[in-house]
Length: 312
Image 1 (cartoon, rainbow, N blue to C red):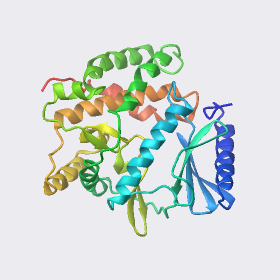
Image 2 (cartoon, helix red, strand yellow):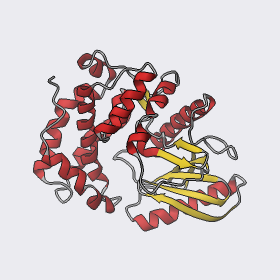
Image 3 (tube, rainbow, N blue to C red):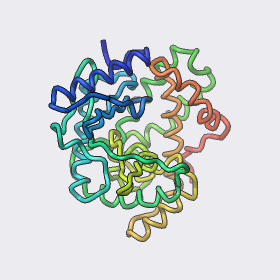
């Protein structure tokens, strides 16, 4: 039995049990595990210990325990380095070894508990400005990272969707595949990106919208979930944001001496991100709730012309 069981309730129960037992095996007191989040990962607070375990459960086509663990090791290395530079990040738990743990078909990581107190109304514009500081810090990270590696999952996802007309209409899949044919030569390798965007800078980035992964605590905000940390253009971290938020980032970047986001490259990254959204339909058998959750972004994608054209 693997961590990608298609029964969400059973999968959550097994993930919580695996996290609790793995914690106890490492000497942690675990009497009241609390699920903090349960979508693509089950995130469990091993109360009363100040430890949170993230257990990926809904996985891309072709994912294995080995590929998960490799990505988790990269994430831990990035976060430990950022913490050493004084960056506000959620750090691996100091109570256990900072390494992925495999148990019962899951690969999980252990993090220090943070007193998360989300505001009633997030201020996406204010929260995006300091992403420039994060990018400035990440520029100097020299550890091994791959270039937008998660985009390699897109063709396999589209291939799976081609066999599941119940998940996507043929016209939608045809459009997605045609857009991917245009974008893939540019967005899947650093050479391809720089050939089209000669002024772009490739650097370590968060990889999964840092604005939306900012945890508010009484001591201040902390960046979390670097599981998709990679090499890429800073524009990738600014997708799915309103113009005011991008403008706030641009103003802060200018103060730090960083380049402003390139509008054309941002459009291409936005178009690529939307194809990722289409690809997530391949995960609906693992996470049925996503079928409803994806209706709004997919409707937005359908309603607008292809925004990733490579013309000026």
